[in-house]
Amino acid sequence: MKLKIIRDTFTENTTIGKLYIDGVYFCETLEDKDRGLDQKFPESVNVALKVYGETCIPYGTYNVIVTPSARLKRTLPLILGVEGFQGIRIHKGNSKKDTLGCVILGTTRGIDAVYQSTVQELRLVELLKDKKDITIEIVKL
Image 1 (cartoon, rainbow, N blue to C red):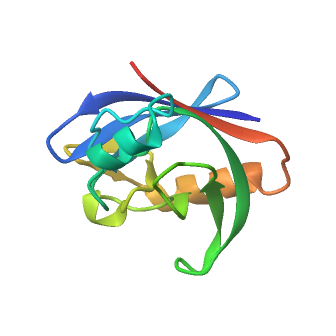
Image 2: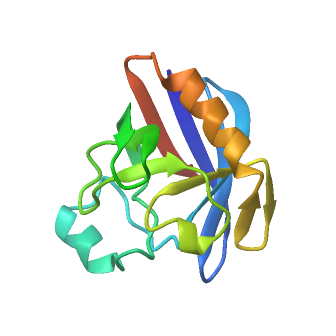
């Protein structure tokens, strides 16, 4: 299964985009500020550009597994192999305060926010929970 986030809106605080699953639009996404990190860069470059808890993950392609989150107390998608980041999940939330490097899902978007996120998290977990070989590609429009 192939997930793809196309980032299209960039503000001083957040990055908003769209999530597609196997080429079909699924929902809106909210992430921390885009600081230009890229999986192709040496880790030292990404680490130098990263601001903890205020930076979206680097552009690139990553593997995803669905596992229980000890911190969030529920089963969620986990993005693997993101250099300089740990515990990056895809989950519900509404604003920058909910991101901490993670990808937030929503049905609609606002300024630095997404809304109706719980339903999107439940739908995504249901779609992914029994799948193997899940990847996520993150690109800029």
